[in-house]
Image (cartoon, rainbow, N blue to C red; front, side, top):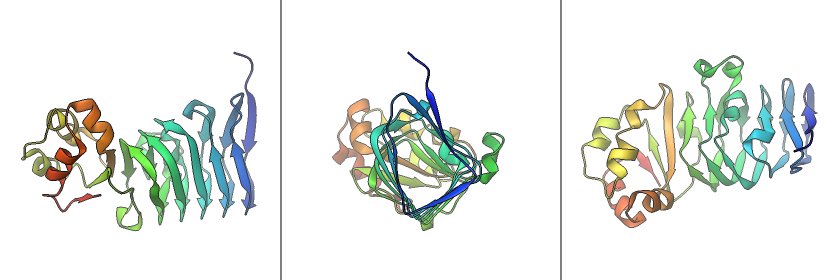
Length: 208
């Protein structure tokens, strides 16, 4: 593998632009002092090629063209009024200063994930009532730690109970919402989305 070219956006405000972050040979930094307003950001790089550090995004649309996996850097971003499209797996958003330095900048409000597919994505330390989550087959557990015992008290199909639900209490403090994909869970743990939904319908702390 050759050298990666650093593409750095920092200490500027960009409005009404389309940013294509798609070059596999680049390492993209959306960094300190950057504010994007009404921009469309096209992401087609793995998480290892995208560094977000204390940037602010207002009314932006993120088009995720390649599955973005285990990208924790959103926790360093302040997101307001943004829309997400595409597949997000193991990504965290919101306010989680315990995670590390610089993370106190993180925030999320008034964002729309209805056109995203999310698996194992968490909202930290923010008000989930201001957010719109993806619809079925995705589902979102609100207050997963506080409701863990209640969610554990019923029989879940396949191995969903022991593997997905019993681990809720181990989520980090500050986890206010957890979004999963019933199709992905069903495939991994020997059940069907319909069987999962039949259990979800019994709880008022689950959105789908």
